[in-house]
Image (cartoon, rainbow, N blue to C red; front, side, top):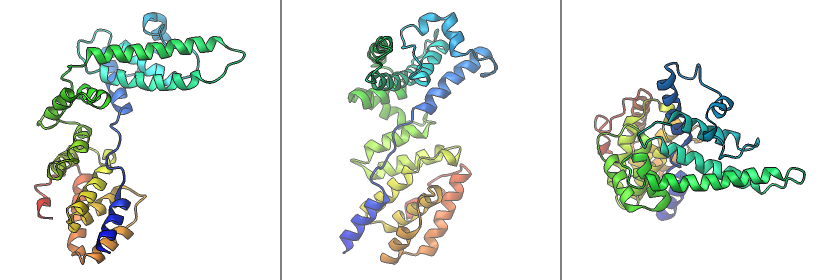
Length: 294
């Protein structure tokens, strides 16, 4: 019964420990930051896509021009426009992601029959060819890039071990300001080293400036590791934190966990409240909270 209960709890806690590495937010941030630098006024006087294509036709001509995939195409055009003279590789990460999304879109709509408008198929095929070519070109250009996002890209897309080591070295440094990078690193560490994974996730939590941005899969991952380590107090606490940030979750399973293992729930609930308060105020520090005592 002990084993079956533990297995059941783990299954219900989470079957997907880590969410997909974010893309769209990063894409938007990069080109908006570029726009602000160029205009000095943010997007107040930002040119429309039509205006960009009219004044810089070379940016748009190799993309499909029909009404489909308009949003994906716009992302590419803006990234190209605002980074025409960039000497930095950083923008190539969101550009690669945008081309991937654009390729998925044009490949899907290309299969839709247009009995009366056969010309649309030709322009979509052009979009497919362009996206495939640009992904290959950008991947080739950035293969050895030190940019952590590009290193992450080459590791996840091409299983490039050297890229992963570059990414890992950066993520392990004190230069990291993006918690998503640490969550991505933890998704690898969890396969071999739970102690390091916990430390990495604690670092990630300490970097969030807004509690609304926190990846709730972190809490589920910590709770699941507590079950793996037979540390039911640890699991109880992180399951409680998950409840505070995930409205879909009720307290039934946490209560069952406390009852099953006769946990000091009053003390643990206070720890949950303290962690939640620290996360909400962006002051989370695992050492100050003495979480190693759990």
